[in-house]
Length: 169
Image (cartoon, rainbow, N blue to C red; front, side, top):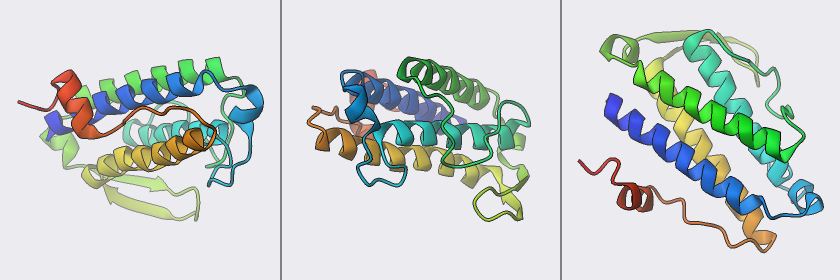
């Protein structure tokens, strides 16, 4: 199971690099334009993905920054946000490296943000959620970039596997 999450952590970082590279050429107005997505803009969506990752890693590890709102703008500047994204991807990778069977069988206890309540939840499906959540919102970011006329890269897992060789053995 650890190998699966290691692949997903690598895939996550690969996708984020590709998306940020695609967005790097946007004008500031286009990058911040409210296009009606859950978090309005490419900028809001990128921030939300980072918020989600930080919230979950804080729950998993008990350390690191823990945003208090799902629509929090952690970084207003694209370059700083991109650097933070890379750092968080490395943090996810380090966390996955430390997983073992006991940790994967553990249970989380946390307080939910969107509907405040105490939650007890197994780590294994929470890890699946972490990666699924990223994929969901990267899909929204891809749609926004496409709407803005950006030639968006393929983020298919199969394409990642074939290009990198990760997950094929």
